Length: 124
Image (cartoon, rainbow, N blue to C red; front, side, top):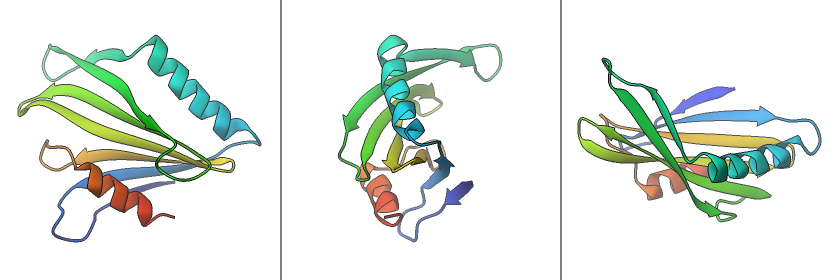
């Protein structure tokens, strides 16, 4: 299930939320795979606007501080027309379900960490 979250004013940021259910133990395995992938391959190159490639750099920001049974906070950094921008991605496991929240920001600028924390607190 995907939901576009639009918080109340004064914030104008946007976040996408996907909730996925896994077989018993699968959600924990998924988060372990994410952490391993970050260690193996912290950057990815994709086709960008026009012919220029776009390099996405991922970094593990924290683990365990977002609630749930297990959580991972990642950052994704890339160059935009506004300069280098860093957007957050939160993964929160509750039992065999993972809630993934991706910061879309607003007009190319990322949301603040407090906006992401507020979004997650409304989902508890």
